[in-house]
Image (tube, rainbow, N blue to C red; front, side, top):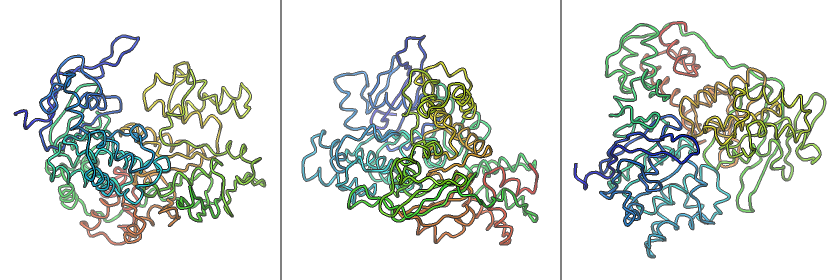
Length: 585
């Protein structure tokens, strides 16, 4: 392969971050090549070395051993590293780390302006990039007033305006809603086709990896597997060992085969169409059982009434929203980036207080507290724990114990009770007390997130509000997070979950609240919500991949309307396999 064909050549790369302890290599003998115009995904658990590798490619770090060539240029050549950066764009997971402009269009202009792009070409690049990501109408908005998802789109637009030849995406879609994610992935694929750019995407989303040309899997700083997605990702046992997830169709075939001892052909586990052939060839269920029927809730914990909120006179974030939340339920709040979800939950514990006729009321037996009364706010905040996106950014104390103690201490909790509460909170989030004397900044990203959540739980809230709690976690980390959330719910905690992941909302919630452009569109149980495709399209809500798969299976098996409804009660692949295979777990 010539230099003209190969954009990135990494040979036996080693890298370690500086530490007072013994040297611990993050990358160990990593070798991989990216051919011009290719679309490659790099997968692995959190902490496996993926992001570090992308930094080496973009010359943000240099390898300690081995060599990386980008566009035929050795990255250690100090005289030419800018030649690499001019032709390379990198979009990181957290957009706040990349935004520098005061307004949206200023931020997008920053990159090409520094490359010396003159007007009117600069103007054309900025407008074109903003139109690509759907932010053109917000071009004059202050960047500080954007939602998390809108900030991610802005970071992407800033890179696109530089017209890179090599695009590095580090969980670039993690904070995007499903519709925006699909638009972005379609854009990337169009850029590859039309502009022949090379793309390396770091992702935990198997549906994204499945769209790429080639996959590398990294574990503990090493490449442990590589190949075409249909060959690598569909090896379900091996993928699970790596802490990752297989495509949904592969998981179903594997689970059915294991459950019913029915073998599958190699091509039947490697594609959606192959899965349908396997299912229709081997199964025709007649007695589908009803499972996981969600119960109706009765006792209200709090009510939101007529909430309207403007960030400025022209920016309406919420428009007359009213909502009841019931004791012990898990309520999911979904909607496109920037629709008002985070603004809504900020009203729940008085971070934002109602304007006009709006009101938020909390019920404690015969007592009613409201965020309209300043004197009630302290009591409400003891009842409602709020954990925002990237909760690990809330950590600040010297030790984990002190960090978790901070909230209870401010509440005036007695020391003995506070210690018991801290230990209970640590256990609830799946950690042990051995972490209490450590610095929170020594922990892994997943552990930091759990510590931040423990700090909220230690205050013993009746309601726990979680804003994208699993964003950026690998599949194993997401599973652990939702195991913890379900355990808290079983113990009586009311959970409010803001999420872009429709499968997670479908599988875990009792009800789903849909917000569109600041207005509440509907609140209904998951099955009812996803039955009406025309209504979903109007609300700009994507059908969960699991539901889409089960509907196609129902069509292929020609199920009756009743059996179809029963099959759509399945909340995960294992339940679906049990229903289709006619077997008990």
